[in-house]
Amino acid sequence: MGAHVGPRDCHITGRNINIAMRAAVAFFGHMGIEMDPRELTHDEREQLQQIIKLHKQHRQLIHSGKLVRLDSDGDSINFGIVNTDQSQALFAYNSVKETQRTNPPKYHFVGLDADKDYTLSLVWPSAFSFYSPSVLSVISNQTFSGEALMTFGMQLPITFPQTSLIFELNEVK
Image (cartoon, rainbow, N blue to C red; front, top):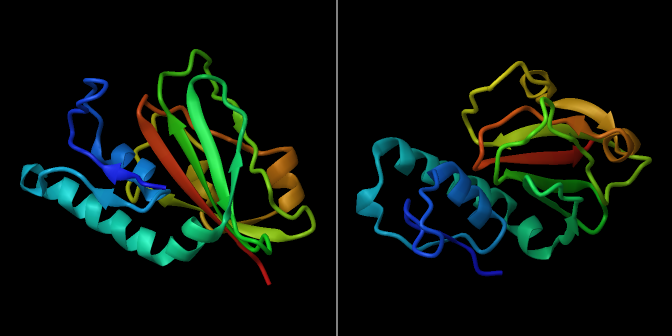
Protein backbone atom coordinates (compact mmCIF):
# COMPACT_ATOMS: atom_id res chain seq x y z
CA MET A 1 0.00 0.00 0.00
CA GLY A 2 1.25 3.44 -0.81
CA ALA A 3 1.77 5.62 2.23
CA HIS A 4 3.85 8.75 2.49
CA VAL A 5 5.06 11.07 5.21
CA GLY A 6 3.53 14.32 4.02
CA PRO A 7 4.10 17.94 4.99
CA ARG A 8 3.24 19.32 8.42
CA ASP A 9 0.16 21.09 7.05
CA CYS A 10 -2.10 18.60 5.29
CA HIS A 11 -3.35 19.94 1.95
CA ILE A 12 -6.44 17.69 2.12
CA THR A 13 -7.74 18.32 5.66
CA GLY A 14 -5.97 21.57 6.53
CA ARG A 15 -4.77 19.99 9.79
CA ASN A 16 -1.32 20.50 11.22
CA ILE A 17 -0.10 17.00 12.14
CA ASN A 18 3.10 16.22 14.04
CA ILE A 19 5.88 14.19 12.43
CA ALA A 20 5.48 11.26 14.85
CA MET A 21 1.90 10.61 13.72
CA ARG A 22 2.56 11.24 10.03
CA ALA A 23 5.49 8.82 10.15
CA ALA A 24 3.57 6.17 12.12
CA VAL A 25 0.78 6.13 9.54
CA ALA A 26 3.21 5.86 6.61
CA PHE A 27 5.15 3.16 8.49
CA PHE A 28 2.51 0.55 7.68
CA GLY A 29 2.73 1.16 3.93
CA HIS A 30 5.74 1.43 1.68
CA MET A 31 6.96 4.42 3.72
CA GLY A 32 7.56 7.08 1.10
CA ILE A 33 8.39 10.72 1.73
CA GLU A 34 6.24 13.36 0.04
CA MET A 35 7.36 16.67 1.45
CA ASP A 36 10.18 19.16 1.28
CA PRO A 37 12.75 17.78 3.78
CA ARG A 38 14.36 21.23 4.04
CA GLU A 39 11.33 22.29 6.13
CA LEU A 40 12.06 19.75 8.87
CA THR A 41 13.39 20.84 12.23
CA HIS A 42 16.38 19.00 13.70
CA ASP A 43 14.06 16.98 15.97
CA GLU A 44 11.75 16.08 13.07
CA ARG A 45 14.73 14.91 10.98
CA GLU A 46 15.88 12.68 13.84
CA GLN A 47 12.40 11.19 14.28
CA LEU A 48 12.09 10.55 10.55
CA GLN A 49 15.49 8.82 10.51
CA GLN A 50 14.43 6.64 13.48
CA ILE A 51 11.19 5.48 11.92
CA ILE A 52 12.82 4.80 8.55
CA LYS A 53 15.32 2.57 10.37
CA LEU A 54 12.44 0.87 12.22
CA HIS A 55 10.57 0.38 8.93
CA LYS A 56 13.61 -1.26 7.34
CA GLN A 57 13.86 -3.65 10.31
CA HIS A 58 10.22 -4.69 9.86
CA ARG A 59 9.80 -4.35 6.08
CA GLN A 60 9.31 -8.09 5.52
CA LEU A 61 6.54 -8.32 8.11
CA ILE A 62 4.84 -5.11 6.94
CA HIS A 63 4.72 -6.23 3.31
CA SER A 64 3.91 -9.91 3.81
CA GLY A 65 1.97 -10.16 7.08
CA LYS A 66 -1.77 -10.46 7.50
CA LEU A 67 -3.62 -7.22 8.22
CA VAL A 68 -5.99 -7.47 11.17
CA ARG A 69 -8.46 -4.75 12.03
CA LEU A 70 -9.44 -4.00 15.61
CA ASP A 71 -12.69 -2.54 16.86
CA SER A 72 -12.83 1.23 16.60
CA ASP A 73 -14.64 3.49 19.03
CA GLY A 74 -14.59 6.52 16.73
CA ASP A 75 -11.79 8.11 18.73
CA SER A 76 -9.01 5.98 17.25
CA ILE A 77 -8.05 3.78 14.33
CA ASN A 78 -6.50 0.48 15.41
CA PHE A 79 -5.02 -2.37 13.41
CA GLY A 80 -2.15 -4.83 13.30
CA ILE A 81 -0.01 -6.95 11.02
CA VAL A 82 0.72 -10.54 12.06
CA ASN A 83 3.13 -12.89 10.27
CA THR A 84 1.96 -16.25 8.94
CA ASP A 85 3.19 -18.38 11.86
CA GLN A 86 1.94 -15.84 14.43
CA SER A 87 5.39 -15.43 15.92
CA GLN A 88 5.70 -11.69 15.29
CA ALA A 89 3.30 -8.78 15.02
CA LEU A 90 3.08 -5.01 14.89
CA PHE A 91 0.01 -3.17 16.16
CA ALA A 92 -0.98 0.48 15.80
CA TYR A 93 -3.11 2.68 18.02
CA ASN A 94 -3.87 5.98 16.27
CA SER A 95 -5.75 8.50 18.40
CA VAL A 96 -7.54 10.84 16.02
CA LYS A 97 -9.62 12.78 18.52
CA GLU A 98 -9.69 13.22 22.26
CA THR A 99 -11.37 10.46 24.20
CA GLN A 100 -14.48 11.53 26.08
CA ARG A 101 -13.80 9.08 28.89
CA THR A 102 -11.43 9.36 31.79
CA ASN A 103 -9.93 6.04 30.68
CA PRO A 104 -9.54 5.06 27.05
CA PRO A 105 -10.72 1.57 26.14
CA LYS A 106 -8.56 -1.50 26.50
CA TYR A 107 -6.55 -2.46 23.45
CA HIS A 108 -7.26 -6.06 22.45
CA PHE A 109 -4.56 -7.55 20.24
CA VAL A 110 -6.14 -9.71 17.52
CA GLY A 111 -4.84 -12.59 15.40
CA LEU A 112 -2.25 -13.94 17.83
CA ASP A 113 -1.85 -17.57 18.88
CA ALA A 114 -3.57 -18.02 22.25
CA ASP A 115 -1.09 -20.76 23.20
CA LYS A 116 2.06 -18.70 22.60
CA ASP A 117 3.78 -16.22 24.90
CA TYR A 118 4.82 -12.84 23.51
CA THR A 119 7.22 -10.11 24.50
CA LEU A 120 5.41 -6.78 24.16
CA SER A 121 7.26 -3.54 23.49
CA LEU A 122 6.29 0.00 22.56
CA VAL A 123 8.57 0.75 19.57
CA TRP A 124 7.11 4.11 18.46
CA PRO A 125 7.34 6.89 19.28
CA SER A 126 10.92 6.66 20.48
CA ALA A 127 10.17 9.25 23.18
CA PHE A 128 6.67 9.38 24.62
CA SER A 129 5.62 11.75 27.37
CA PHE A 130 2.80 10.36 29.46
CA TYR A 131 -0.28 12.51 29.96
CA SER A 132 -0.97 10.54 33.13
CA PRO A 133 0.57 7.50 34.85
CA SER A 134 0.42 4.63 32.40
CA VAL A 135 0.98 0.90 32.07
CA LEU A 136 3.25 1.71 29.11
CA SER A 137 5.94 2.81 31.53
CA VAL A 138 6.29 -0.77 32.80
CA ILE A 139 5.37 -3.08 29.88
CA SER A 140 8.50 -2.82 27.80
CA ASN A 141 9.91 -6.28 27.16
CA GLN A 142 7.38 -7.95 29.46
CA THR A 143 5.95 -11.35 28.50
CA PHE A 144 2.23 -12.05 28.15
CA SER A 145 0.25 -14.97 26.79
CA GLY A 146 -1.48 -14.55 23.46
CA GLU A 147 -4.71 -15.50 25.20
CA ALA A 148 -4.33 -12.66 27.75
CA LEU A 149 -3.42 -10.10 25.07
CA MET A 150 -6.45 -11.03 22.98
CA THR A 151 -8.98 -11.61 25.79
CA PHE A 152 -8.07 -9.04 28.44
CA GLY A 153 -6.05 -6.64 26.33
CA MET A 154 -4.01 -3.76 27.67
CA GLN A 155 -5.21 -0.51 29.19
CA LEU A 156 -4.28 2.32 26.87
CA PRO A 157 -2.90 5.56 28.28
CA ILE A 158 -4.71 8.86 27.99
CA THR A 159 -3.07 10.50 25.01
CA PHE A 160 -3.47 13.77 23.20
CA PRO A 161 -5.33 13.68 19.89
CA GLN A 162 -3.17 12.82 16.88
CA THR A 163 -0.97 10.44 18.83
CA SER A 164 0.19 7.14 17.34
CA LEU A 165 1.62 4.22 19.27
CA ILE A 166 3.22 1.20 17.60
CA PHE A 167 3.64 -2.03 19.56
CA GLU A 168 5.87 -4.94 18.59
CA LEU A 169 5.15 -8.49 19.74
CA ASN A 170 7.62 -11.35 19.41
CA GLU A 171 7.05 -14.95 20.37
CA VAL A 172 9.10 -16.12 23.35
CA LYS A 173 10.82 -19.35 22.32
